[in-house]
Image (cartoon, rainbow, N blue to C red; front, side, top):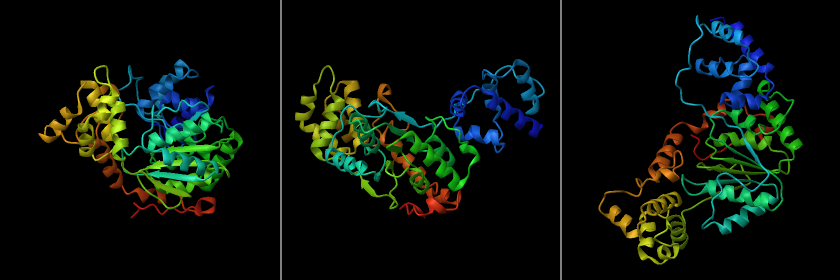
Length: 377
């Protein structure tokens, strides 16, 4: 492999594209940070991605064989290998209340809605925390939708489950065209560049959903312009925010209402579930856990059953509250069952969430927000 010629050719092809770097990242199904690192020569492009690169509009036919030769392949492969797609982390700018993860109805969080909205109206930074499946994302998406409906401005939303700080910061600017090459900036310079882009775009609310590494909060908060509100959801608590709100399990009446909403079907109306004493027993056996109740409701709807059918299965040991599975038609990745969510949480805790702190030295603007996440060891 001729590493120098390969990297030089990759940079040339990427810079020649008529797309923005964000669009090139979408075309190649990678993050913008990855594209920036290719251009900077910091990372080598994976073999599988070469095929996608050669399909970009500005790549000439004769260059396809050339780039594979530079990569060390004697012959141009006939077809790409079968690989699982990688995930892009670009943020989404919502200027309408069509937030993707917003539930039809939010149960049991009315008091928190008003509290959170009052804090955000003051430009505060709020963390919603709690173990998996308690409804943090449902609450955050409802807040975001109501924010847009109230005419307070667009909402910048992204899933912050990346383990790379660069990806998270660069994803915040993905919806905006900018002359600043973030991929070539490091440390506090990148933080300040993101802040300038968001300020120029007039963003007034940023939502980070499912933040895995609370140590990122130091940098993300520093990248938020003064007066811009920040709402974060995470399974981990942290003290370096203005307000941390822990979501608990639902109250009995709220849990039954949630069950009835998801269980109602052509044969059994919501009111029947609301008045059925076995609905209360089922919610009790599910520990009033929001996701568990949603899954149980979807199971009842799919099978057009009354609550006692599922209670009986739990009593007889054919199922456990952890193993009731969401029907395929309503299934979301990593939320098929309560067991799946709890296992995912356990794995994340076991992966040393404080490791990110070693990526950048805390200094300047980011330093004053030093993280003290409760799961750091």
